[in-house]
Image (cartoon, rainbow, N blue to C red; front, top):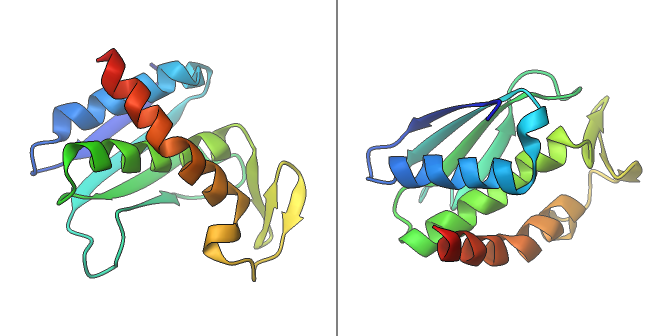
Length: 141
């Protein structure tokens, strides 16, 4: 795997996190990309989030990502949320999603910054696929 993975977790999901990310990279054949993912498992209740994915550094051909995932989730939700955030990593790596000069693009089409979160095409895709991927992963391990 050409993905450098660091997992910061004190909730007992460290091995699971590593397994999910490795499975995802293999499933989507992302091994041809060199990239770094830091996964931080922490309480995100105040933020009202289950997870987030942030590009570290430049959004031009990004290769470094930080995923934060809520450490209070049960196993199934944890896996689905991690799949969701890894889908965002894939979107950036494969250039499905791009950002240029503060403007968002999806498959080359400009997406207005005023677009509601749930209407953003990268979120639509991630929400549509997260549970199916989680089920597939949980069946195969």
